[in-house]
Length: 38
Image (tube, rainbow, N blue to C red; front, side, top):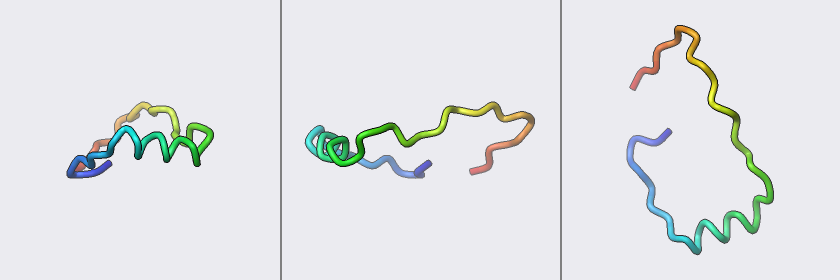
């Protein structure tokens, strides 16, 4: 997670997707009592 949002153009997203051909993210997991700290 980033503190500041990053702006990207549709062209940049398209270029990224042309290089990375699969989703490389993990599913959201339950917190199970953990605390998110900033």
